[in-house]
Structure formats: C-alpha cells, structure tokens
Amino acid sequence: MVVERAWTDKRIENILGNMLRAGVGLSAAIVFCGAVIYLSRHGHAPASYRVFEGEPSDLHSLHGIVRDAMTLNGRGIIQLGLLFLIATPVARVVFSIFGFAEERDGLYVFFTLIVLAILLFSLVGSSQM
Amino acid sequence: MNILEFTGLVFLGSMIAGLLGALTGLGGGVVLVPLLALFFKVDIRYAIGASLVSVIATSSGAAAAYVKEGFSNIRIGMFLEIATTLGALLGAFLAVWVSTSAIAIIFGIALIVSAYLSRKPRPLAERNLPPDPLATRLRLNGSFPDLEGVRSYNVQRVPAGFSIMFGAGALSGLLGIGSGALKVLAMDQAMKIPFKVSTTTSNFMIGVTAAASAGIYLHRGYIDPGLSMPVMLGVLTGSLVGTRILVKTETKWLRIIFSVVIVLLGIEMLYKGLTGRL
Image (cartoon, each protein chain N blue to C red):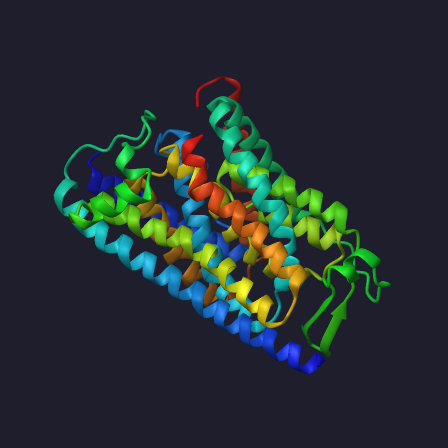
C-alpha cells in the first residue's frame, strides 16, 4: 500500500514537472513572437512608462486579449502569452485534483478545490468588483 | 529613448537580475521592481505587474526540476497554498488602495529584511522530532532523498506556519515579489521542515501564489505587455543560465555582494518613498 502510494506520488510529480516546463516554454515562445511583431512595428516610437495610465480595457479581459491577438496585434499576442503563463500554475492545481482523487485522498481533493476557487475568483470574478 | 532601446536595456537588466538571483539563491524578483522604478523611471505599479509575471515564469521553471527530484512535498505545498493565495488576494486588493509612496516604503523594508534573513546563520536543524497530531492528520509528514539515503521528517507547529504563509502571500500580492525568504522562514524555522524541502516547496508554491494576484493585476491594468515582455524573457534567460553554472562557481562572495546591493536598493526605495518621490 505504502509502496503503491509512493509510486503514484512519484508519477504525479513527474507529470507536474513536465506540465510546468511545457507551460513556461509555450508562453515564452508566444511572448517572443508578439515581441517581434511589436518591436518591428513600434520599435522607433518613444517609450513612456513614467506615468501610470492603466492598460486599455481590451488588454484586461480574456475576451479582449484573444480578439487583439487574432488580429496579429503585437501587444495582444504578448498579453496572450502572459495569460498562458498565468494559466500554468492554475493548470497544475487542476491536475493535482485528479492526482489526489486517484490516490483517494478526499481531504486533499478538498484543499485543492479551495485553492482553485481562489484562483478562479482572481482571474474571472474580480473583474466585476 | 525609443521602445527598441528601452526594451533592449530592460531585457539586459532583467537578465542580470535573473542570473544573480539564481546564482545566489536569493531570487531575482526582489531587485526587479527597484531596478525598473529607480533606474528606468517606470511607474511602480507597472514595475510590480511586470515583476509578478516574471516571478511566475522563474518559479514554474525551477519547480519543474525540483519536483522531479523528489525534494518538494506537494501536500505541504497544496495545504499552505490555501494561506498564500488568500493572502495574495488581500495584498493585490490592498495594492489598489495604498499610495505608491507607501508601497515604496514597504518595499524598502522588505528588501532590507530579506537581505538580513539570507545572511543570518541558520540554527542546526533538529532531527527526529515527535509527530505532531495536527500535522499527522493533515498527512504533511514526508521524506526526501538525502546523502544517507531516504530521510523522513515530522512537521511541527502547523497554525504558526499557516499564519506566516498568509502574510507571505499578502506581501507577494502587494509588492509583486515571490517572498520566498518569508515562505522558507515559515517552513524551515516555524514548521521545522528540512531546509532543502522548504526551499524547493517554497519555489513550487510561488507560482500559484503569484497567479492568485496576477488575475487582479490584469483587470486593474497593471500588466503592460510592452514592459512585461523584456522583463519576463530576460529573467527567464538569466535564471536558466544561472542554474546551469550554479555548481561550478564559488557563490559566497557573490552572495555578499548581492546582499549589499539589495540593502542599498532597499535604502533608496525607503528614501524615495519617505520623500514622496515614487
């Protein structure tokens, strides 16, 4: 029994490791593509970050970012890559639910669901506040 | 300065921060915000947003390696993430209400404290502690590969560790840093988890904690793609290179120099915050 659980833990850890690596790699690649487009179009414009204006509203929401990225807007594609990056730890949490469920560890399925709820509230729910 | 030059310089600066962070184990995140705010004159809110994004990248990248080696304890990580993500929500909400000067002051103090914590000699780890009833019920006790084979440990003082983790999450959400030093303190000192397990589990948790405040930051317009892009790619490149050459270099002097840099940046942030210039 103990051996079996240790083996499952080990396997879950391996998949988790690969998932994290893939998520970071994918998002870095998307950000890089966006950077090439953004810099080739706007590279010679003056840079201004001294005054905080907040981002235009289309770069705030999932819907707006995807729409911008679809039109091959450089900043939109970068923001999409950053969304993938933010989603990587969330995906890790989602996968952990299945991992703990497979080990029949109800307590940790419950804990993981709490963490997931907090993450989803931040990503989706907090925009209405 | 045009966008091309700005992007190149920020990339270079972030790469050095990531490299030094990986080499010294102090994390590059803490110097990113002062670097952007003090040297590149970026508004501290954009700086915090960009830093938070890079923190997710480096911690997920590093966690991938540690998780496979079997050092990190995913149960301890998941349980304590309840505290850090709740704290991160609070911190990110506070960030909207607190003035930028106050954020600069808190940041300055956090820099100085984290440099102090990393220099402070650690008391020798206590081994073979009796199992704690709460930790046992939560199945937090574990084992990890050691020089002498597999070593097991019993986790202590769960409520104290959980509380410190809530604070670490709040600080992470307010300042856009990983607050790894505080997370390690909670696990290593309060919960008596072996140092190697503490550091790797802390790294494992940083990404999820940062993701909890990143959503709020995104909705508030703190995450600028033009700025986050060179920061994220730079820190990621620097830390990847840093972990490759980690074993070959003598890091003692580097750690001392980097600690001094962190303290100086902390003093500068405090000064700018107190005089209301950030």
